[in-house]
View 1: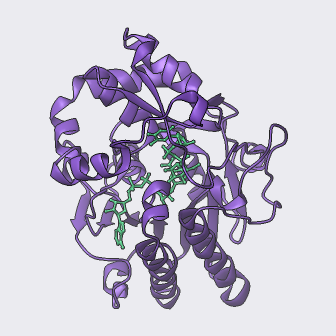
View 2: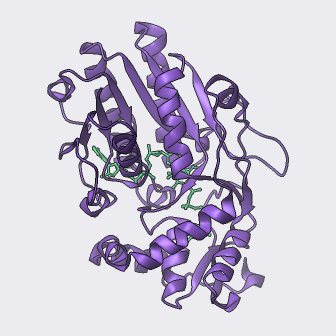
Length: 338
Ligand code: NAD
Ligand code: DAU
């Protein structure tokens, strides 16, 4: 089989390529990645043979050239960080909406047999203390990131409705695991804790996220390619739900670091309170069950960050340091101010 994977130098994309090539020796993967700040060549080190990186933008014209003989497209490429989208939304609209359209159109013209559009639970918006989102929930995105992903999702749906182009959509909850950029909660807290630096928790840390190990995500994406029905949406949830404060406290406990490293800081504007997915459809139709429970997966993940200081260094270069200081300097709040 030959796949075109977009965004394969990022977190989930690189884990997916490694997973696929290990399980399907002899298959070939073209990895189309622009290598933004989030794409890292170090994510591709030690890959099994069969992959080729092509440094291009999904917004470019002429992507058909990369689709010769391709059986399926797996589309991960995106601007993916909510905080950056709050700061500056335009690149999110460009990549996540326009880029997704360019890719869909090129794939339709080349009559690609399957197009897997990798999306997120954030397109549904946020929940209060109760309830779960099914695939029938309305799209009510709250951040510019989530709105741009919802735009891509709607185009993917329209390509099925209008052209019967065989798109399958997946919407996953929060992923964690190796090779995740340290701007995101778990690697940020892990790498700070390993250096005894403060752990900046937004607000009071009461928001709830649902956590899926990236390996469980890669496995269900493989199943979606094999068994998913064109035109359908599949929620990919784990039922492993934790408040941010619980996650951070667990990281400190597992790393044997003091809880006093926790620092409460000003909240994210428009911070979604809770995500929770009903993943019954994926369990039934794709015969998928997540296998890695959160505490076990978190312990493995923390070991990986501890054992890979060179990778951490590669991901925390000068541009990350600048980002970190813009985002976190002078953000600390007393709890009474929150
Ligand atoms: P990431 O930010 O780690 O990686 C994104 C990759 O896309 C990078 O390699 C980057 O260089 C590449 N890219 C960005 N813009 C591009 C462009 N215009 N052209 C080509 N390549 C470009 O993201 P991730 O966390 O691995 O997420 C991958 C996908 O999964 C995204 O679509 C995201 O919305 C979705 N998703 C992520 C999570 C999560 O928890 N990380 C959960 C659900 C869904
Ligand atoms: O739900 C799926 C989404 O999960 C994906 O679509 C996004 O691409 C991915 O980035 C992630 O979005 P979140 O906003 O949930 O992830 P993030 O790691 O940025 O934050 C997780 C929670 O932790 C969120 O409630 C904000 C909080 N947080 C985050 C950071 C970086 C903090 O309290 N402190 C921090 O420094």
